Length: 325
Image (cartoon, rainbow, N blue to C red):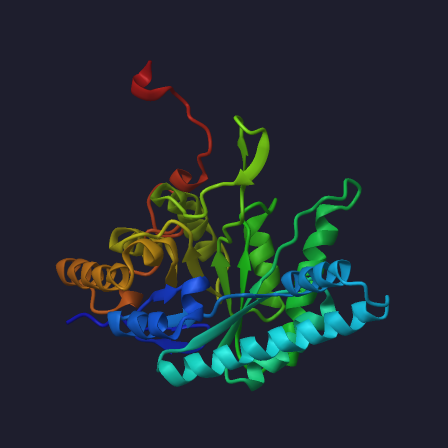
């Protein structure tokens, strides 16, 4: 039978399929089932500094306490939330044998490094930085924002022994250049792409509501283009495809385009562990049919470097309407 093992950010995974960070990966019975189904690694549900700060501000606003209580609430909630997260890492490590990758999102430099060090001490095999803040300042230059992100990565990497991956958005002016910058700061992998909360509008009640949280299969095509380009232009860094990967076909396509691993989230909510086991079966069938002995044999086989017409990745405009009409 074909060998599905891969090396991702220096970690040996038994398959290229990763359970993405979500509410599911904070539940021990779920991660155990994912391992049994053949998952290669678990990315633990993200720890958000913003959520900790928001909870402290809310509790302080609801109380009649003295102003000094704000600092107490912040530090108490921070320490309590962090300890719960560290215990979750320990519990998951005690439940599964596959690599366990923690995930954090912070907005203050000190907390990025502080959280990262504690997570390493708790036994995480790797760390995924969920790094993005919505740019809302008109006069702030995009280059300055990217420099801030790169600075965070550099500082976190320098403080750790475990490998670091960076989960990024898809809206950078020069995406390959930004990934090259992440690599030069020590990131071992880049996860493409982060899927954000999206607002919608209820036109009957005239209010802002949350859009559907689940991805569609079509969303994988956006990362497919960039996977094929970035894997060819930026050597020496692993790429993980995230968003819209609902089945084995999507997994195979992303690997052909250059992904080292493929993360599943929505598929796990909708299909449970079967999404993983079915994708594993599809991978074996594809590899056996095509004569590939390992995932490395076809990883990047159809990326920007390895196809006869790389312009197929470059093209962004429709030259004709459908049907030539």
